[in-house]
Length: 108
Image (cartoon, rainbow, N blue to C red):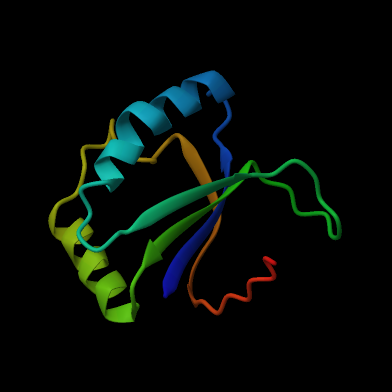
């Protein structure tokens, strides 16, 4: 599995309520159309254990493999959303990385 992992804040001038409304009513439905995107996980930051970096959320976008991610990225370049629907002006990205994932489950 491959995950695109993004850390971000909400842009100044936008309330959490406004951001969450846009996210759930516009952005998530738009993401659901991206070919190969299997799952989106939103991790809202509640505290920092170590370091001094702060941000609102870490999002995970799950793909089967790197080829699927690359096809999805190309599709998004060829099918851009309008500026009003996009994260531009709403989301202050701190990082955006693509990771190969290994998981270890300890459920008994």
